[in-house]
Image (cartoon, rainbow, N blue to C red; front, side):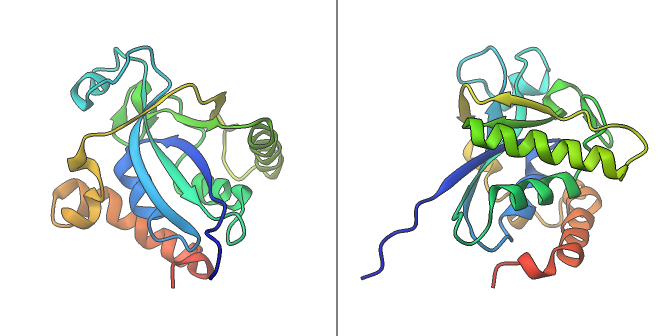
Length: 182
């Protein structure tokens, strides 16, 4: 009998959580992805409350992964490649603090890895502006309402899915083909 793997969790915000979830569900070594809200001041906020920007929460995902199959650093490398980490409080047409770019670390090791990667990416000058991604401790995470789970696969014909998520997933598949779930 094979023992269950020891899993880790990454909590990431990079615009709409539907986009992040759609990508990370395809990553080999990822066990589950949970959309939700973090980084704000209201306990158990609703989607409608978060959308106002008044709660201070970001739309985020918790990516539960097997570190023997994929490292936290690789999770972050994928994260930085699938959104614009130089934008403050926006991704594309989605504007507001709820769409900010942030890494919510669970340990000092995660904080250190995130800070080192941001430093390396800034030195590489992959973008015209420096990375604006917040690196902050995770304080609380509230799962989103059930209808947000696997949103892209449940609603592939929805206009937002076709115009925003589908191209992002397609680009991810090209760039990270070696990391796709088998």
